[in-house]
Length: 113
Length: 112
Image (cartoon, rainbow over all chains, first blue to last red; front, side, top):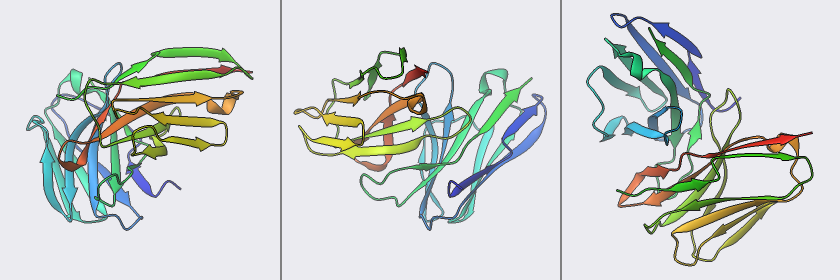
């Protein structure tokens, strides 16, 4: 078990659908992250929550909406996505301190048709 | 904008060979982390280096942080098929505890 669990592992959705990605961490960390991983690009930080407050929002389109109801759970709500949003979406957690390592989940492979 | 360039982008070698992958930047980082990502999984931290000139060893893996804290290298001795994966470097600092700058990665394949 990685300590960070993401569901679903695979998701195919049309451009008019609404879906949500879920992430749960069992490590007692106080920071949670959403990253986007696309081919031939570096990992892109999308959102960071620390103690359930959003502390980073990297100019992500509004069709991606994060939610952090408590320090163990993180959601990414998706609506009216575009085909270029197809990617691996990785959730991570950390202690939120300087040089704290990231603990990643295994990701959700999203395909937008 | 801080950027990290990783080279080579792809590397395919035979079991038992040695290899080095590089992570370079024109920016100074307060720390460098190396991760390995296997197919179908998320990245897993291998090491963090924080001091210029620092060398850390993890079994057959040797990590070095440049004196000026702008570059890092990962050397693998006697590579094994289990070393196959995407190696990512990530630079920390820049005034945020949360933002890491990632490179695009080196995809290593070790053939039996």
